[in-house]
Length: 290
Image (cartoon, one colour):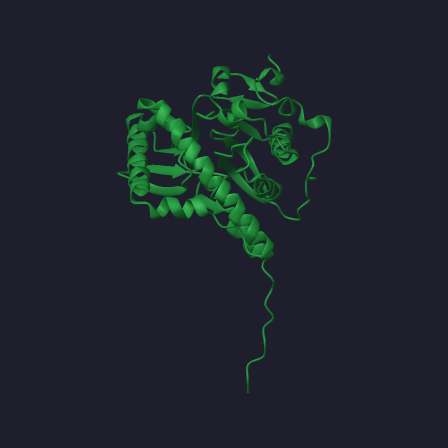
């Protein structure tokens, strides 16, 4: 079997157990337990990646199966400029640690980490590489797992335009970093500038709606009950003409994950909101006036 070190990704990704993680794994009293967790669009190797938020998520959550639904590593960005801080290695450390502890980890590469796609069918360090996967929920539903770029008309028909859009998106994310640095200094919680912009622009909203319909239609044609994807950085969970559509969002803007409870119930976790609520000061209850 091939070694994980053969993957064309930063060298420090290959062997995260040679040193302790930069951010030590926290021992949480009662970690949340889920049957399945889906995360995607982490974009390791970029400044926009919210690695610290994802590390906090992994330190609070356990699951039987973890799906990495594409764009985990941003190969597009790494080709242009090497950026790999210790926190990004800590994310990898936690993923591989889960696999070592018995969690089934399935990696479905996306367009930004398409260099991993030729390894379809291989198992690296306990991480299964799959071009797509079928997941059966606790209540018997079959879900198609894909990254979703294969349904993006812009990506398929005009690849050059996708790269232009990526450059514009990167610029917006740089603004997002500055805005949140200022908010952090002011003691304010994380807030996504790019998510607000996306939901305010009419064309973006129309694109997202059309994309969701196309993905759900493709899943219905495959004879499954639903589909889980990422790609468009827009977490959603809804039914489209009898087919379940689930998008786990991202860890650049929204910091969201899709989870399956042990009874098959699905839920989207908005981790930035949970961290803000956890860190909010407890307000003292004043006695009512007589």
